[in-house]
Structure formats: structure tokens, C-alpha cells
Length: 254
Image 1 (cartoon, helix red, strand yellow):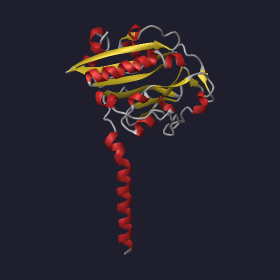
Image 2 (image 1 turned 180 degrees about the vertical axis):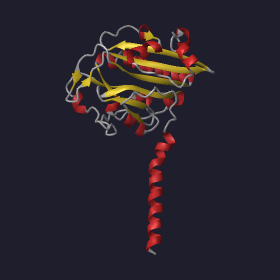
Image 3 (image 1 turned 120 degrees about the vertical axis):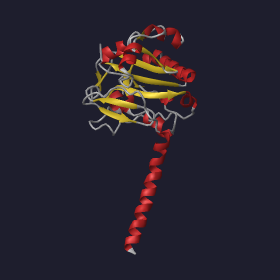
Image 4 (image 1 turned 90 degrees about the vertical axis):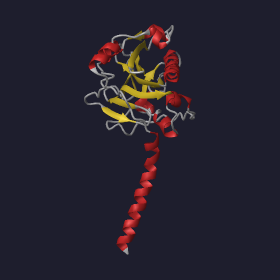
């Protein structure tokens, strides 16, 4: 009798665990075209994005995600629930690091791109997905670029995005954890027209970024040289070398 009871309890526990995990299984994306991993950096997968965390700078060096037209059309309340990321084994930045500094906790993967579920939206507010950004930058030209990216997802159905800071001409550090204030930020985009890959990059200075987003277009190769990252290693070498060394403005609506 006792044996039967134990087995029954085990089955119930397993079933309960299954249903607890089920929402994550249902909503999680299959991430394609992730950047190459950085030695010594922790890679963290979340519902709608994956990031590589730099302990030295207390923020990601890259955040990568796939954005589709269906995801853009989804509706989800913005939680505004900023929190440290307990999954970072070395400890992430905290809200206290940003407090009274004059810098925004700037999303790298925007909350507006994480509307698949309440969980996904909450994950986008983890401090591991943030970089210090001046309000005029975060709420100005950076927000315009984020909106443009969503427009591209609506037009082309699926876009692969890599975004993050560039630690050149940095503006100091924040808080007890010494969160680096990046001098620049980047976005790299990949899409496919049939089987043909298309890429475009953006490199924006945190100070003095005025004008239009098209003024800050660069090749993906330029971004890779500046950051030391390899954005799309899953592309064949011949395709990667060709598409990352050029961009076609008309193909991106400019």
C-alpha cells in the first residue's frame, strides 16, 4: 500500500511539473541565426530573446531575437517591472545602480517586441537586458529605430536582430557594480527574400545622435569589426562574407 501511494504521489508531482513547464514550451521560440558565443560570457535564453552577458560591463554584449509580423501584432501590457537577473551566475546589475543617475535603463530587446506572453514581457525588464542610455537617446532616435525594426517585421514577415552596446568612447560607469555607460549602440538585421539573405547595420553614438536613422547605416562587417562579434555564423562563409559587406538601401525602404 505504501509503495502504491509513493508511486501515485510521484505521478501527480511529475504531472504538476509538466503543466508548470508547459507554458514555456508552448511560447518559446526556436532561435535561428544566433551570434557566436563569447568566451567566458554566460549565454542566457529567454522566451523571445537570447543574450550574452558581460560581467566586465554588467550588461549584454549582444541580445539576439527573431521578430515576426504575428508577434508585432500581439497585445500585452507593459509590466514596467525592472529587476535584477538572478540567472546571471556572477550577479547582474541592479536597480540601485541606475538610481538617481540621470540614465534610463535602456532595453536592448524592447518590451514592445516581447508580447508573446506576460512572462516574455517580464523577462524583457530584467537588468541583464538593459544598458545605460541617456533619456534623449533612449526615447528619441533609439526608439525610432526600434519602431522601424517592427515595421520591417510587418513588411517581411520575419527579421533576425542582434543588438547591443559598443564599448568605444565610453561615458563612465554607474553604481556599485560599475555598469559601463557605452559610447555607442548597434543593431544588425538579417532577413531573407526567398533564399537570398539581406543585411543592414546601424551604429549610433549615445551623445549627439541627431537627424534620421538612415544617417547611421553601416555594414554588418563594420559592426563586427568594432565589437569583435560574429553575428551570423550559421550563414555559409561565402554568403556571410558577401551580405555582411554591403547593404542595399532600396531593399530596406530607404
